[in-house]
Image (tube, rainbow, N blue to C red):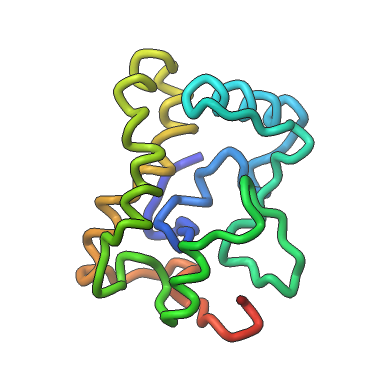
Amino acid sequence: MERSEITGIRARCGFLCSDCRAYKENIHSDADRERLNVVFEKIYGYTIAPGNVNCDGCIEPDQNSPQRLGTKRCPIRDCVLEKGIVHCGRCDIFPCDLMERHLATVETVVTKARIMLTPEEYRDFVEPYLSREYLSRKNDRIGVWRLLTFTPSPSHL
């Protein structure tokens, strides 16, 4: 898959859903689910049962009963929707403590991941979640991402 910020689907926290191996469009077999489980356990220290690997992403409205990886309610998503912005980078207080903790989940494993993972695994399981730079450029983005054309409404909470 070619990686592109212009055509990618971004989560509320800036993660690049369209490159995430758990995103519904990227799951093609049970082997894909098992690979994600193995690598996530290796670098992030938690297990995701292969049967639970299928994420609709946080831009999917709640009314559609989406599957989300890891949590049913994401405090970052809730905050962004409450503020009526498309992602955390548009927030006046970015990066807040909540977002710093979220970013640290990935940023703290980068060195270990570079040693433990193949370049392909690093690309697939770390790079989509390195979103600080993307979010920090909040004022210079002109994009055609599906996320940016999505307008939050009360039904999405």
